[in-house]
Length: 170
Picture (cartoon, rainbow, N blue to C red):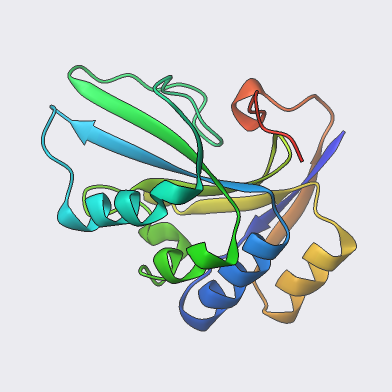
């Protein structure tokens, strides 16, 4: 059984506080770089990729990630990139001012954070959805204090493969 804490939109000062909290309470974070019709990525996206390069742990092309079980589009390339959570990433991740701004065409997509190989926080920018999986009491307090909780629910089944990432450890 898993508990899911669905969040309201995290933006502005709450977003900056969240990024700090997440970087200090996770092992990894993930961004998805998408090239539709093989068009070049935006300068902003390229700069994010370059500025996070030293924190890269793993990159893969399989078009499935936390919140997106599988996607397919002709002539589209996906680069799912995992980074080591490190305070030095704060400045780069704060270049946007909200969770749902992590979406194409200007930015990489769907910021997520991992504890070991399990997704802890996921977002689907274009659908304006995000949540915490199996939140700790500290996690609940953090989001309650900022009035960012939409709902809390339980699922009685194992997490789908999209929320588990092989090759990441605590």
